[in-house]
Each structure stands twice: as structure tokens, then as C-alpha cells.
Image 1 (cartoon, rainbow, N blue to C red):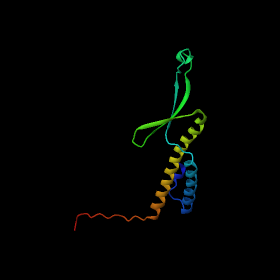
Image 2 (cartoon, helix red, strand yellow):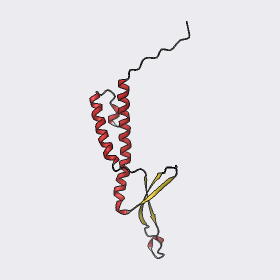
Image 3 (cartoon, one colour):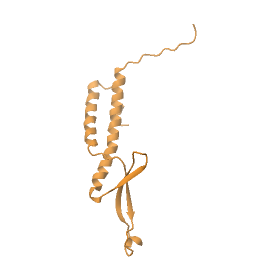
Image 4 (cartoon, rainbow, N blue to C red):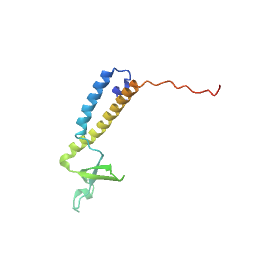
Length: 128
């Protein structure tokens, strides 16, 4: 569990500072985040005499991003070699964005539960 989520007895100003920091971090990550999973493939080419058809190395890596589409079906797209690094970083940013949102949700929960005083429930024992 992240360190920020382990501190339930913080002062309101500490929560506010953490929330503001997380919101700034979320904004930065959201600018580049991509949703999906990266896969690499190696293939043989169409040239019969090429070494990839024998014991030589295959051509690649060819990068693809797959994700679940609007209708619940897995879909994806090819990633040109020129942007491999950027796409990898952007998919990593998606994971970091999710972590930040979880921490923010935890801070929001702590803030709300700290301001709400719960009354102890009394249960009827059934005796008169």
C-alpha cells in the first residue's frame, strides 16, 4: 500500500496539500496517458530466400496496442517504430494515473469520514 494511504490521522491541511499534489500529478499524467496493453510480434517476411524462413531471426519487434473497445470486444492498433518509446511511456503513464486516482479516492474518503460523525446504533433487544 502506498505510504500516502497509510496515514489516517493527518491534519486537514496535510490532506489538502496531498490532494493538490495528486491533482497536479494527475493532470500531467492525463496529458500523455494511453489505455491498452502492449504486445510485440516477430514475423517472417514474404521473401522466400530470407533467413527468417530458416533458423535466422524473424523480423521485429512489431508493436501493437490492444484494448477493450466500446462494444466489449478486444481491438487494437499497430504502433509505428518511430513512436515505440513514446507509446510505451504513455501506457506506463496510464498505470501511474490509476495509482494516483486510487490515492486521491482514499484521501477523499478519509476527508469525508473525518467530517461525518457516526452515531452508535442501538438495537432493540426485543424485551419490554
